[in-house]
Image 1: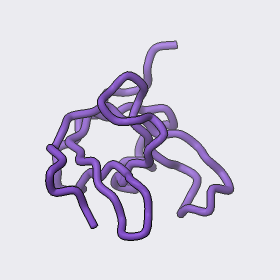
Image 2 (image 1 turned 90 degrees about the horizontal axis):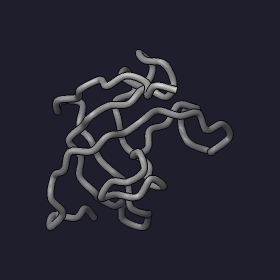
Image 3 (image 1 turned 180 degrees about the vertical axis):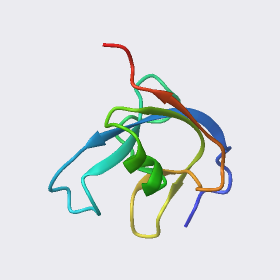
Image 4 (image 1 turned 30 degrees about the vertical axis):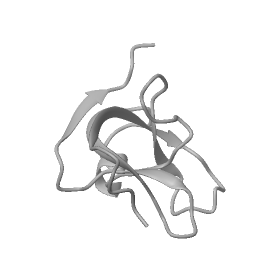
Length: 91
């Protein structure tokens, strides 16, 4: 369990809606495209920040690629680590 060899990295993540996923709630977080981690990975991210900003808001976070025993990879952030709110991308 875990990936101790994986380094801590700075990445940009964004909130999005995914209903009926079987996970807790509909607001989820994923890395944006073009970074060193796949956009398809889920991000463990503080629920309070997900709810405090509009869907599509981007955040610059410290993160680490990890996994669960018997489960797949995901990106871990910690509620105590610094998070910079970048806002929504201009449309």
